[in-house]
Image (tube, rainbow, N blue to C red; front, top):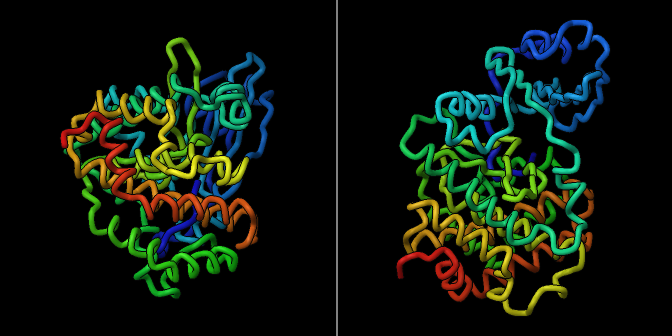
Length: 361
């Protein structure tokens, strides 16, 4: 989950309460007899929130997500994620692209899901030659289209976290960037000082058109990948989700794929012309989305996807700075270089995105 936003949210109301233990959550979910749950192996995978993998003797596995004390004190909650699963409980087309929930407790802020096979997660696949490939790219495009189509026009209680677009005009004291990370602050100030990047963020902020539920943190390490055939993906970690512009999710998917190359091999490994970054994988992703979602059928949408691609690249550079605690790390520099190149060729890239989506001129 990304902990980078331009504007700090208000603190979560109420005092923190100790959440129920993972075995108690799974017992309430009724997934197995008590003796099987007592024999389960529990693995702590916590980062910002309390995350536990429970492996049962019969080979089944579940993930239990709860609010940690530190996350609560930082003003964070699982409200948006839990609401997404509530929506999925009455929208089967949306539920089809989420992991299976076995327990959703909005009052206690607890979520339990069927765990994905380890081989279908990012860290088992991202170094494979040709990752992610056309089939998975198209599957992600279809999944995003399903989310956006299924949730257009329904009531949504939360607003998606896309705050990085407001970065140039947000006073430093109101930013929330990686828990007050000094490295991220340095990178944020460099972005603001870059006239072209700052203008690109302002232009995107002004253009966003909230229309449906968006994930808001689309990247391959938040995706379960079943290579099939047919290839199929599920989206997890909905903590930042809410009402937003579907172009943000699509731009984020493209940005993560390109930035992965930049992080692993450097921006020099990319073609000098950003238009050429729309390789067969990304073209398949955009085409599959365009085929399945009417929201993609305009020139303006392609413009917004391109702007979100730039903004999300800036966001990913800030994430790198937070995780590496180094504003001058090669990964940070390379992803920012991606954002700069995109911003400098916005119109040409938008034309290529429009073509891949099959949008009207």
